[in-house]
Image (cartoon, rainbow, N blue to C red; front, side):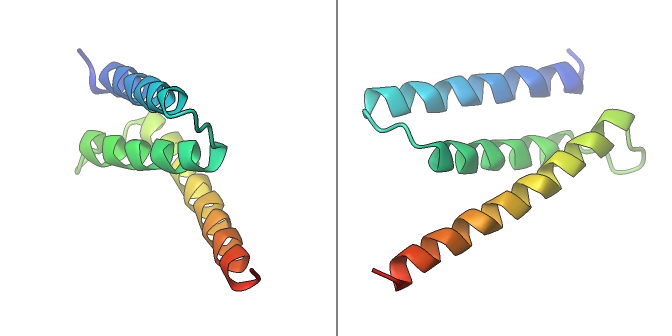
Length: 86
């Protein structure tokens, strides 16, 4: 199985697992879901990254990771402001 196909299967299974645990815990929170998705994506990108050649799809995945990190930063700032202003 190619790395690209394996990465898609793994991230899909990761998201299904997160969703199942959220439903079982009766706590569906998009911020937690997003952070856990980003962690899974970062692990997959690090494991699938090649050292000497960059496949075209990896460049786009790295753009998605960069946007995800910016959104993660916004979530962190929002949570810190919630804590400070309570």
